[in-house]
Length: 487
Image (cartoon, rainbow, N blue to C red; front, side):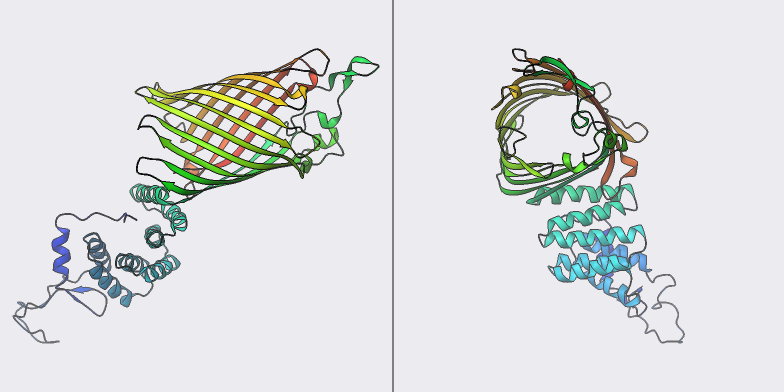
């Protein structure tokens, strides 16, 4: 791992070499060498030719600077000697312990490096001390191939950075370690009040065809109407790199797990007294392979194959097999991408059926105006199942704008989409069904509240579905609070 320390000027080498001729005083200062012209005798008179000039002793801060310069100049032995002198003066000198850790790492003593860095963090009191201790700990861990733990300590270093420059060094080192870490970990959390957690209707009545009664308008049960509440979502994705080539091809083993849990509002409990939030809980676990590569620098592609299982309402719901691919083309003014995929689902519950879903999409992304980023997308899909009422074809168009400059310290994104699904069979025999879906959303990334490299996000989503049949009309509104990695 690279050392993100201060760089040495042309004069630093000379100072460092001159330091080899200095003696270490008992108080931990660096004393000027005796010229040999006159012997110093305590209390004796002298003409000054061989007397240490007043002010020639180096202060602890000067010694620390010299030790860092020695590290940068490739002399960990000198840095270690200076750190030891400082620790004789003060065994809880956090900066000296951090220097000792870096010196030990440079000579291959990783256990000593980790121990010194651990002590440096334990006694650190200022941002500078915590930063240097965290950087030393991260460097020792990375050199021992414990890169995931090193990344956590680099986040701590960035959090405690005394200046923007120090923070930038910690972020750069984080990216450097992440690129070389075979294990990638991605976490997500969000909390959201939602108006329609069960995908219920906004109507109180629906259209049905009943034996002996024909087509009727009937009241919807409370559980078929939109229920509001609180959604808690959490998930983790693990990637382990199985192989990578010099030409940019990489194959990963991927594991993912996510869950959405709900708490019903009082209004929802009034509508559906027997319903519980756990009735609508949804969980997913999947594992598979992902491959990224490129035909050349301007034509990257991605392939994936996943198998997984879902649970709904506390019961097994489906087992699925998902295959997908994406090809991109980079042009001078933007990036064109198209993708395709297939998901085959096997029913594990009587509440659903076996189904296949084909999908294809096309998108164009380019900078616009003042370095904003605009994405336009089209999507087509086809669903086939054991139930004709669930067979459909669909198409959608979407646009998304990410502002290039923060507004009041926040990064802003806006999106809009419109799509239609045409079902082969509606609830009335001989009639199909058309659902039109409109979605608006906005996301704010609140950078000023960054903690340990994570920034809070607030997303607002409004969605309306208009159907030929009232029981499928729905509204959904949610405000989601989450976290996103800043680097």
